[in-house]
Amino acid sequence: EAQVTQNPRYLITVTGKKLTVTCSQNMNHEYMSWYRQDPGLGLRQIYYSMNVEVTDKGDVPEGYKVSRKEKRNFPLILESPSPNQTSLYFCASKKVGTEPTGELFFGEGSRLTVL
Amino acid sequence: GQQLNQSPQSMFIQEGEDVSMNCTSSSIFNTWLWYKQDPGEGPVLLIALYKAGELTSNGRLTAQFGITRKDSFLNISASIPSDVGIYFCAGPSMEYGNKLVFGAGTILRVKS
Image 1 (tube, each protein chain N blue to C red):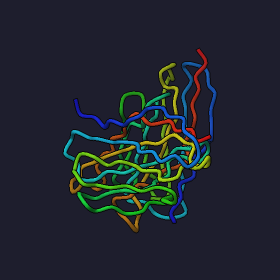
Image 2: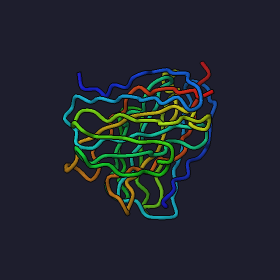
Image 3: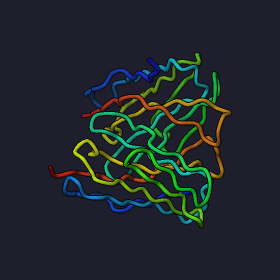
Image 4: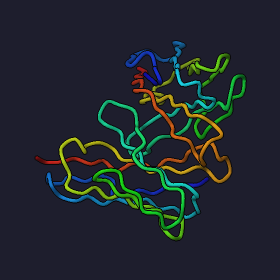
């Protein structure tokens, strides 16, 4: 089954304790992206990657890092989490180079709480 | 940057009613997308619109690409309880074509 898998789905942590949210897709998509969803603000892009070893900042990259060492994986790293990073995070992927904008496939989300 | 404004922010309707929501922007979009997020899930694409004036249906859903290319509408006919969720409009950034800009979403609640 074609899917984007995120882990963990739920996490409560404390300020300053480094954490990684993993994302893996099995559709051989070139493009992967991380979003955060906050009430009233919709989905805001954190980082995206057009292909292996190619990453770029989205609209709200501060406090986050990413890497794209393999095509299927795109982990989101919070080096020193702070309470304002409490949010619902989504990983998404799509194929590049087809119609004007290929369908973006989303994971089920990771709810992160930073105390 | 480009922004998408969705209205209404939320709706609480009776089962069986028709629903209308829209998305506007001060800048032109060449593609309009409508996504639905079920409670506890990630967004899923409902309808994609690629041409100004285009009207596309997907079951009880109908979406239109505004003729000015600055707006889009989504209608749901005869709503049912499983229509509950958040509906997002989205469009590719003119500056960075592979980046999607999302609206803040319309929350739909259905009273049965």
